Figure 1 (cartoon, one colour):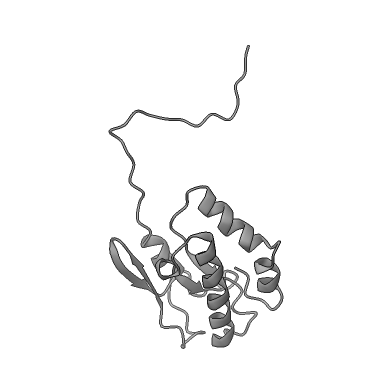
Figure 2 (figure 1 turned 90 degrees about the vertical axis):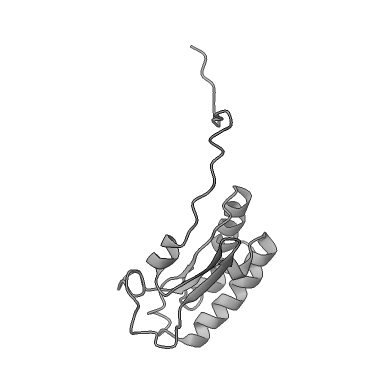
Length: 139
């Protein structure tokens, strides 16, 4: 999610891409989500901006079908690499993310730790193989 002034508001608006992407992901069966609040450097790493975005996004993803308690929210700056691999010194107020799932609790501070905390989906390998078909060509 873009954290810049106006960018977040455009993405979360009625026809915004943030809404569309969350709805599409849930509809397509994606059950684990990470919300990276990008461009926090343009928002001055403001804790108030972070809290505002987390509150708005949590309400929306709950309506879509996700449990906000199982979604880590990570403030990052992709341009500067802040909070992606190592904790950033630019947001001393950020205590890290915590997510609760059926498997238990997971905590961390960075985007990499959030990615590492994703649980691999269970594959029914004892059942027949099924492949989705998109088109059929007759030659």
